Every structure is written in structure tokens, then in C-alpha cells.
Picture (cartoon, helix red, strand yellow):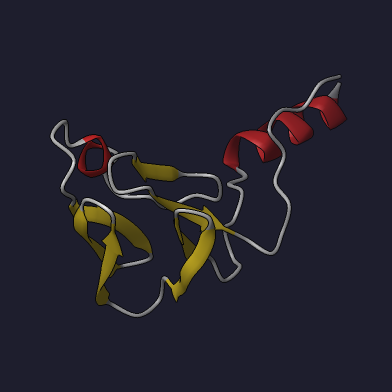
Length: 110
């Protein structure tokens, strides 16, 4: 029983991606456009068929600041911080995602 409690506590406190270097990968149409380190603040203009998408990196996270899509879905995704977090601009055919060199669990079953 004690082992189960310790394991449960660890799983509650464990965050995938903590402690390693995360990157943001930006994909346009069918190719990788850029990989950005999340430890250095920067802005990047990403061209697409509908116009320019502005991407910001700051404080270990990335976000879509502005995109030409009418509905603003990319901007509403907010700050991406964890591996697997994704923002997509469909009109501009751009994907922004957090990637990691370490694998994380989607779920754990006993």
C-alpha cells in the first residue's frame, strides 16, 4: 500500500518535459519551417498562403500572437508550454507545437 501511495504522489507531481530542453517546431504546409529554443525570447514572422503569422517565444513558452485567420483559433490557443501542446492556423497552413527529446506518457494504467 505504501508503494502505491508513493507512486501515486510521484505521478501527481510529475510533469512531462520538466527538466529537459523543450523546443517549438513550426510547420508550414508540408515542411518544417523552424525549430525555436524556448529559453531565448524572440519573435518570428512565418509566411503562409493567407499572410504572415507572428510567433512569440518568452519565458519557456511559445504562442501565436497574430495570424490572418478570421476566427483567431491560433491566437486563442494561448501559451504552449508542455510537449504536445499545439496551435494551428488553418487558413495559413501553419502548425506550432512543443516537442521534446524525452517521451512522455499519455496515460498510466494499473
